[in-house]
Length: 348
Ligand SMILES: CC(C)(COP(=O)(O)OP(=O)(O)OC[C@H]1O[C@@H](n2cnc3c(N)ncnc32)[C@H](O)[C@@H]1OP(=O)(O)O)[C@@H](O)C(=O)NCCC(=O)NCCS
Image 1: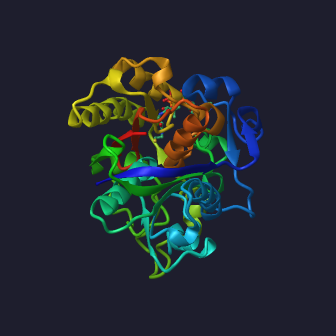
Image 2: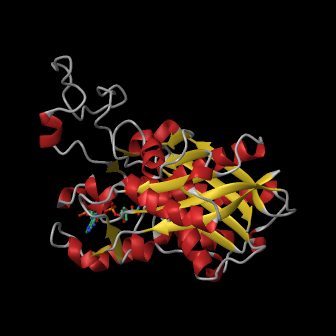
């Protein structure tokens, strides 16, 4: 038994934020952003009217309807995000509540840009084992609430956008259809290269450079202090070039791994959906694998990098645009913070 995508949906907020709009807040330019990342604009969630969970609900409602079932038929939720509504509990239970689902299991996945492929892999195993029949897999992010929009944070804040995507996985016994394999990897050696350190319980344990002073902190003052906020240490950190260098190696590697596991080659790929990290990374991967332009789907130009949501949004859009047809070989590939990277190969 395999699992197949029985329904897919995505949601992006209405509010379009162009590169030009960002110049009101920081020293940047449309030219710089487009040249380095390919991004023209991104969507930002309504500040108080939308959350990571509510966007996940919008995408899930479409996926569930397209699968021909109702929210009450879902028997497990896997929710991937790095920008949850609450530090805890996770978004899975908030979605379960919002969609009035049964008292089913809800699992949150914290694997950043690889989150959706990790979540899909977990769901795939539960279907293959026969444990569940209708699993909802969601990737959703509200980045616009947690980035540094001053010039200090421009290397990160110009890249990210908000949105959500979801799929319903069901078992299938059809030959040659559904998820053929998934491949998951991690290397924690560079965990601090793309990370948000605070709030956290690390107390500088992993850091050679002290980012915040915990020495004299009283009990109860160590999780989030005024000093951290005053010094903007509550924002993510990224060494962009180090991420870029690793990404262009690991993306092709994990695609080749997926193809080899199924005795397939790059020319067999109908559509590659790379995590939308940076258009330059996608183009590099395309070139390295010797793929034609029409074999790789990119929409980062419109949405920026939406982390766990980027693959399901792109997959859904590509399908809605008729670029993925029944029987096509689709490859999903992701790389991000951790570092973690992953791929999934499926026959649509
Ligand atoms: C982030 C990224 C676009 C930056 O491009 P880069 O060519 O590496 O740029 P650098 O960080 O070396 O910075 C070059 C200069 O541009 C400046 N700069 C950074 N962000 C800028 C912005 N938004 N606008 C204008 N200038 C900017 C830097 O301050 C630096 O200036 P300096 O030379 O005067 O010091 C690129 O490294 C990247 O895409 N990396 C991968 C990131 C990624 O995919 N992250 C998600 C992982 S899933």
